[in-house]
Length: 69
Image 1 (cartoon, rainbow, N blue to C red):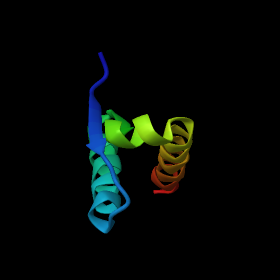
Image 2: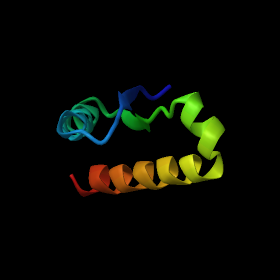
Image 3: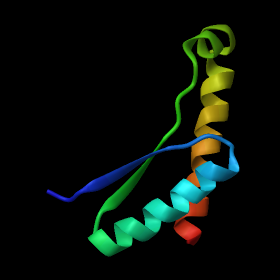
């Protein structure tokens, strides 16, 4: 079974650093990287599909960043 490094991300500079570190570490270990972003249920309850769409777009942007490293 291939190891996976889980990375909790948000829109902060330290989050980008965590992605970069994780991608580097995964390359060394031969592991996968999985990005995780949490949206507060209060936000998803009030904004529903809009909040999910924003979160999905954010994850896609960060995935693209990770692939460029």
